[in-house]
Image 1 (cartoon, rainbow, N blue to C red):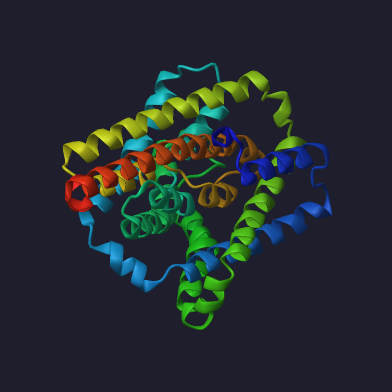
Image 2 (spheres, rainbow, N blue to C red):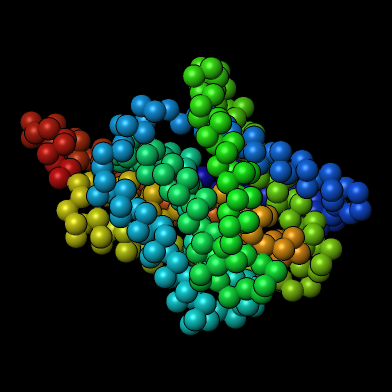
Length: 338
């Protein structure tokens, strides 16, 4: 069954980690890849800004109850679960891996997959666009602050200070704003070349992962991380994902959201962004620590795609059944979803 296949990005990530493991960047190549990575990240967020239209922002912006819950799930419930995981220490993992889990819990939601899965499942796409995009932007400010407040790291790591927030704004937010302003001139080209822009997104992430893992390999990451550790990270990712999905599902039904909004809450409130998390880690943490810290995020990324893809398919099938039943009964589908 195709449902359980690794997505193409994950395969590329694995290949990049292997490349960095056998051929890590050393010497002058480190400076070159650092410059190239910074430029690629700026281009990545410039393109994100150029893709987001004002119409989409306005269309989904009025659904404040949904957006408020998604932000609460992303930046309050998720970090609380991360703190519980770190305090409880239920899995035989190192402190560095638990730091990685805590880091993924404070990140903003992913944009592309949240919207794509919401659309597939029959959710409120306009609200998903607005909510996921707002989460991504808010994460530029909130995530570094949460790193400083919640993560027990050494003085050389993230402290959430103004200098680090300034670096993140310069590398992530400023290109995003410039890209959005430039949309009036390049908007049509962006719409025609979304596939090319998607490839630019992936190339940027892969560059950051290669640089991070090159440094980690030089510092002996694979002497600290074995197969059993990777399997336990998968287990931890599954537990974390099922908990947040259950909480969001219960909240959506408790607060009386309709079916379309429930879907949006599930898929926007349960994701964590690899595209934001890897570049941000590159700024917030020492280069020697980035590789092992983003490892749980990389694995969680794959787990969330697989599980949520299956969940979206279930919603799609149940939606088709509801539509058929409504058509047979002569009732509008909107009424049947409430």
